[in-house]
Image (cartoon, one colour):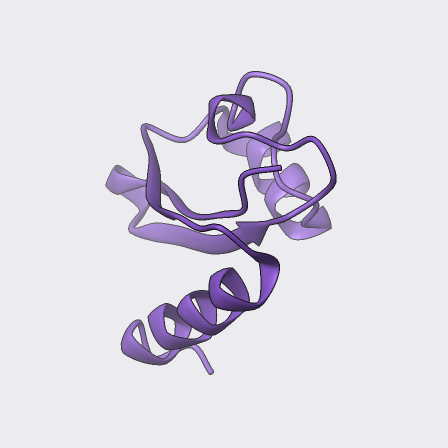
Length: 81
């Protein structure tokens, strides 16, 4: 398991999603190849507008807790909390 925090976005629509993944066996290489977030809102947005044009792993971690803390810091920085 390699926990990570990621950012996806639709630049032209100025719509962004920041998330964390820490499931057993996960890897950053899963992002947008076999893992498309667990967000139902993102799934609906993707169905309507297609795949995001920005897909980025912001940081990888050694453990779940550090990843969750970093995700919260990013969400606060993006002013969505």
